[in-house]
Amino acid sequence: MRWPGLSMMLLLAWMAFAPAAVAVESQFSLDPAQEERFRELAKELRCPKCQNQSLFDSGAGVADDLRWAIIRQIKEGKSDEEIIDYMVTRYGDFVRYRPVFDNRTLILWIGPFVLLLVGVAVLVYQIRKRRRLVEEAKLDEAHRARVEALLRDGGEERS
Image (tube, rainbow, N blue to C red; front, top):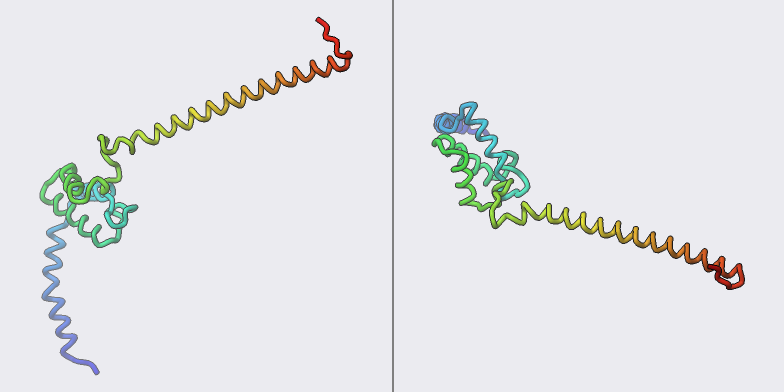
């Protein structure tokens, strides 16, 4: 059974809320320079829920909220640093894809280089150890040849 008034009520509801949707869209519309800033900021910040996606790529609800927060702050005239500081204050340093260089993140920045140096040192040590063993094996071969010569000559060593 169809209700003739239902489609009319839906049409009236749509017409009532359409201006609000247009107002929200115009309130947050960005010019091309602001749009570029938004894209760069959203790519530089990590989604707190997804953890491996930027705000730009994430489809999570919290990412939508953070994107709107970025847009709102851009419209308010805040700088990129102020927007990032707001996000870091609210969600911690984890929200950054590239953490800042300070005492707390020192291990993140220097750790890979330390591991690389340790790896190179172990490699050099192993190469030197192997060379030493090869040299000792060559000496053993020389010693073995000398012993064989002595055995052939009847045990007399000649000087």
